[in-house]
Amino acid sequence: MANTTSAKKAVRKIARRTAVNKSRRSRVRNFVRKVEEAIASGDKAAAETAFRAAQPELMRAATKGVLHRNTASRKVSRLAQRVKAVGA
Image 1 (cartoon, rainbow, N blue to C red):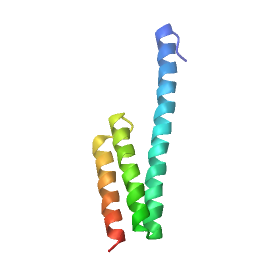
Image 2: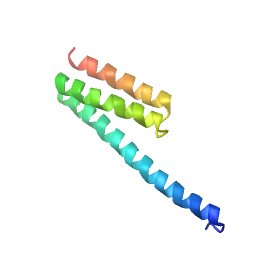
Image 3: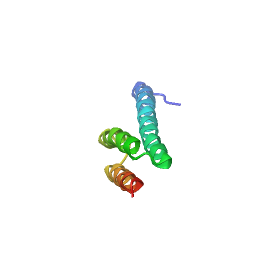
Image 4: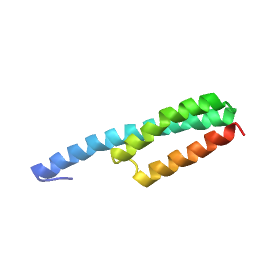
């Protein structure tokens, strides 16, 4: 347990930040899941719409430090590839 005043404050800050990051990560997962469900259903229009909504969320997560930039870019790239393949 934290003893000093500054350590107690740090614990509070970390708890707040963790909650924010958790909600952001959850939000990203929901957007990605919607894209994957649209891909699974074979609906190209829905997949493209869901992908256009998911892409900025992934990049925002990278900007905020929830995901690494390369991880977000990789996820966007792979989702784009799968969305593109739906029509083929």
